[in-house]
Image 1 (cartoon, rainbow, N blue to C red):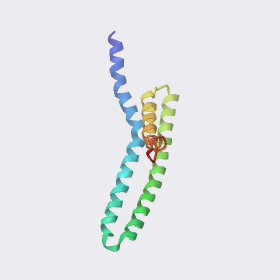
Image 2 (tube, rainbow, N blue to C red):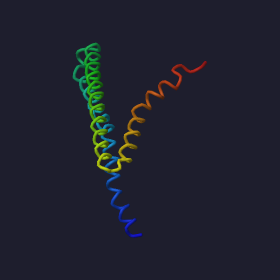
Image 3 (cartoon, rainbow, N blue to C red):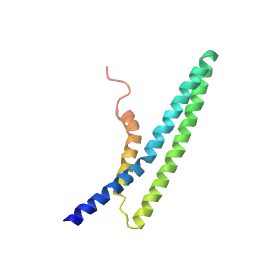
Amino acid sequence: MSTLSSNSQNLSPQRGRDALLGLVPLVLLVLIIAVALALAALARQLLAASGFFAQQQAAVIILVAGFVLVLVAYVIAIVLTMRRIASWQQNGIAARAALWSLGITALIVILPFLVAILLPQHPAP
């Protein structure tokens, strides 16, 4: 019985590490989005005297660049995470927590799109 409890205690830090590894793409996504929004707000304040069209153009450029950067970073993070999980599984190490956290990350990323598609854009009269 004591070996069973010691095995479960040894597995919990590994599961926590696996879960954190699966959340790396989501953390990267949130950080880059926060930086892009902060830069857009800063550009708006810096270009306040230039007029609306200069502010709008700067905000669009920053947000599009941020979107491209988020897309590239997210794909790279997912690929690297999946490679690490695959290598763990080939070495006989279970990576169930990492896979679950990757699934949760995917759900969090796609949830706003699903809400926008499923909810009506114009309420009924």
